[in-house]
Amino acid sequence: MKMMKKLTSLLMVLLLLLPGLSLAEETEKDGWHFDEKGFLTGEDNPGEEYILEDEDKGVWQYASKDLSIKINRFREQTKKKKKQEYCVAEIWTSPDSPLGVIQSAPKDSLKLKGVAYAGMEQRHVEDLIEKNPSVLAVSDDMYGLRIIPVGKGKTKYDYHGVIIRNGEVIATKTRNSKKKRSWPNLDTMAVYQDGSMKTFDCDALTAEEYLEQGAVQVFAFGPWLLSEGQVHPNLEKINNYSEPRVALGMIEPYHYILIVTAGRPTKKYQGYKLTWLADKMLEYGCTEALNLDGGDTVALAFNNKIIIHGNMEAKNLRNLGSMIAFGERGEQ
Image (cartoon, rainbow, N blue to C red; front, side, top):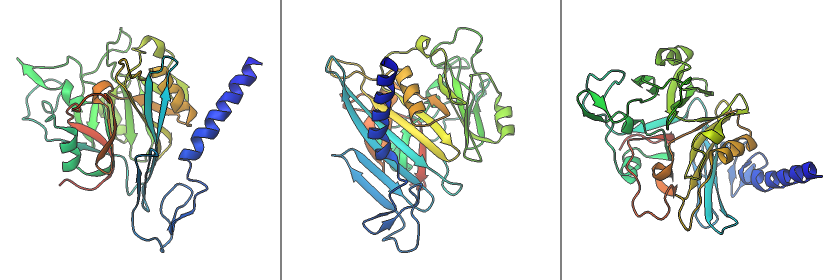
């Protein structure tokens, strides 16, 4: 009986959530024509880009012939009447509009072991996305903070993770996965030329091995949430407390799920646990997923406007040096 109740509850959740994300049945809307992935199709659309921004309903959508994004916002309340808020983005990319990155200018190169250059300029999020406009931008692994020099040939963090951006190796010094791993544990997600993604333990591959495999981007923060459809077995032991979160997952090549949660735990907000994040990614059909930097770093922008961020009660957002981007429009 308990099993039947759980299955019924899961079915109800899927019925409530999936229609909000699935574009498979929507082929025409106000003169715009979409295919089963949400891309614009045909020659008689009103324009080359469809953009919907509905803050009140918590729905944002973008469609072109090579990029499809739909974001839904969800608001919940805990038993203790604390607020919980998150956004789920279903993203279809293509070889003509792949996952990209935006970065501020690197600081002067320094001869530091395992680091190509010492840090990125940390800028206001609004400044960063204004200078590097895109359809969707989200905070990443915040690698720039870990490689800021602090003198005597040292960086702010002893370990930086294996970091690759646009095929360039930025950092290589990572942790030993067989030892007790501190936060962040620097597990990685590689994004390949064919649109696929794969998660790894922090020291599974070297930067050179990632490049040999065809990786274009490698993000390092962790822990990984899903690998080959399996949930990380030790999430309960890895900082599994309620926090603002960002996670990126893959259903299949070029088809991704992004989950961004708000709410630095306070009297009003609760946040979400890593175990919740992994279960949610699995629920949406992902086989690979990585936890990225969270807390006050969390920021999600659509059409260059912030729609959710980590600490909803803070007046100012944390500065960032880099973000993951979809639909880059070129540096301004």
